[in-house]
Length: 173
Image (cartoon, rainbow, N blue to C red; front, side, top):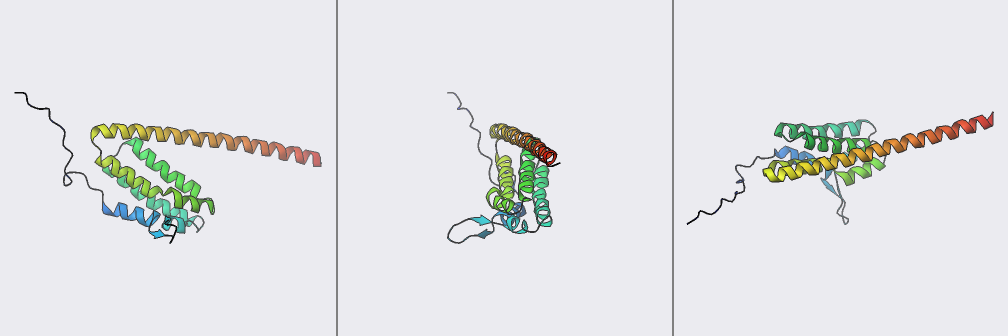
């Protein structure tokens, strides 16, 4: 009689790597500790501190970097670290825009996104890790492409505005 093929068993909970509870707690405080009654929208200290120009966004970025350095300690791949770093950079850059950045902080929740990415990678079996790695690469490629297009667009708009300004000034004199 033939022996049935072995089916890989999922890792028992006690053997699986555990995420430090302070990372989830930090992400919750930064992105979702407060709730708007009736609507159900959640926001955290990231959106509130963002109202303080310069200092608020810097302080929230430091908290986000703590989660990123923890991901490095857990040994996630470079692509995953880059994806998480881009979440932090996007949150910091858009968050620096007055009011618009605060609304974006309520929606984007970069800390909760990064903790979710970290958990997913820690608990994934090798086949899932390859799939997640590909998804991370595509996210990075897409985000870099969008940022490059925005940069090109802003350079074109700046050149058009400069040309208009020079023509207007030339006609005035």
